[in-house]
Image (cartoon, rainbow, N blue to C red; front, side, top):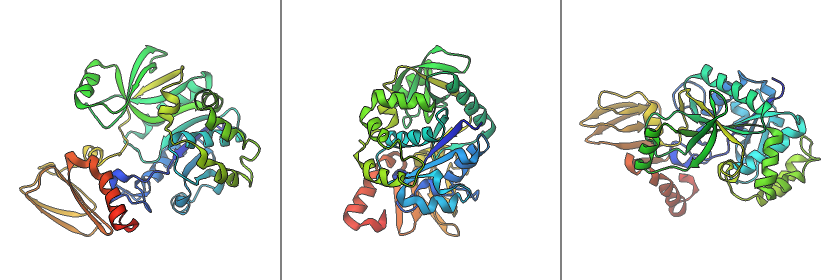
Length: 358
């Protein structure tokens, strides 16, 4: 247990959930379901049952330090790694890996986003324990693959190859978000799993892969070997982190490494990346409408998502397949099939009207 660590990535801004998710309060800090716990808190709670709390690190943008401390009062300042700039997931994972290596050179690490929903907590914990045991004994990179339930175009896919053991397979290919026709083919073959974005490895294995695949990032963080877990660490990061390229761990490492396996799993997973993914898992009325936080009266309306502040009433007439969201000083009304344009709406609002609306 003492060799097992978790890195929770919590620095994103969640622009696809705008205006519910805002720059100053992104989706990982929001209580989507009225449970009294944000997505970040639920993620922390999940891993605190699997490993020592002191072995859980949060990597986030420096602007969210106060929010992290407010929502996770149990963790120490030393468990919060503050990025001075957004550089995607590969630099995030690299810093956390070098930091953990200085604490424990035998560490086994699970890396997880802060904004996923897991419905079957006990099954999830069992898969994580199995994965940590595997990477302890094998110099392999491991990802969790989710059994697909539909031809989803919003997720990446993993094609499985030969068996490693009963649940773990070699990765044959990674595929980015496919179109609908290709997603249907993937589902029919039975060879493809959704890429959950949850990774497991031994700290020596992942650092070796950085040295091989992203040597510039490895060299940058190796320079700080003497300052990790000292008072000089943050100053070193503030000075050097912005030199990292903006690159994902998927593209920079996982798709290029030679020894990559997938643990095929099913534990009620959603990455909550879009309004559509929230729609999939939310309770609906007889007309297929989803209503979160607010009261809703609908007339001749079906398959809508309505989210207003608690205590407000939405009266909807004659709408079909729309997203209606009010949060703060923004009201969004958007066709569900056009939700990929929300990021463009955010950019336009920022450019034309200013930061106060994003």
